[in-house]
Image (cartoon, rainbow, N blue to C red; front, side, top):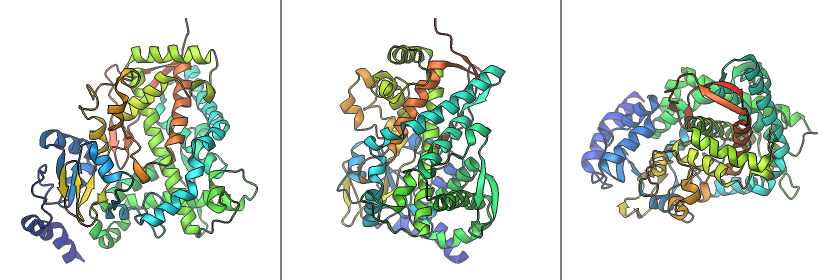
Length: 489
């Protein structure tokens, strides 16, 4: 196996590069990226993969080689060419890095399997269904506001990034399992986990999930070596973190399966379909779907919420304009109803602009060029080559967005939405687009409205800059804010 690893990592890339059977040398590459995936792996370990790819695109053009068999394409047309309906680009072996025995909707690489899983859950995440979840989300928003109020009364700064994460964990555990994990009320993310043998212990939810995504992302970048690297890194703390996260999901799934009187939650849809028929999933399949929903339903929404709060309070004039709109629409109501805010144009514009400037997911999602090769944004790419569109770079396309690095929500009110929409795809597009985006928008609008209406936040230092830590998702670092009650004049 060690000889095999040596060949794959060192000898094979050189031979492939020289032979160039897939005609990839025509695509420029940053540094040694065309020879080895180590370039990507190192950038990811430094938490700046998306920035390295972005800078490479600015220097080298729209089509660049970021690994021996991987072309990154930053042209908006590539979104349709690669991810659009009918494109038939299957998922790359990178998704095997975090896959278990049972595939879930996000890492399933077989088209028919993915379609069946998505069909099973599509009605759960439809907008008309989500509107019925407002009591759960609003109730959890009230717990969040109560905690902010406590910090305000005591004159203590609050780590808003943490408390927004506690919020998303509590919301989604209620939506999925009919029971909150209680992170907001406790003020921490220490939750119960359970091994398949029945041993119950406690672990931190956030660290377990984040550390697991680091190792899975990196190992997937050299998918041919997974039979070896999984064994080599089985001792690594990040792998233990992955096991801890799996055991959190196992514990809550086991509890929910014993609770036959639970509400009509998302979990019930994994057992009974919308026709009242048993779905017939094995336990491993149920665990896999519950795992990815707790992951996606907490991590990316936390990033989106944190980034929006950061950007709004960094831009006082934009904050003031948003408050004018909210005050006019909601009066003195502390926690607005969905009906009163769902159609507010500037609130939605602030959320959209935050998703663009600081996307929760910045990395290009890898797909494999089908047999016969394809034209991608004007350039031909051979079959079996991995291709992706770098989300961060696409969302900062200067042709689509004037002054792309500027936080300017007004562009979504007065700008050319048709032109911008071709590049503004924070939840991807096509048959693999994020199924939970409606819930994400629902939560963001309610939380942002409630916090902005009632509280003034200050950064600990005037020149504070919120760091992004890219694991797989682009997670914001800790956001510690001084808080006080807003005084409306």
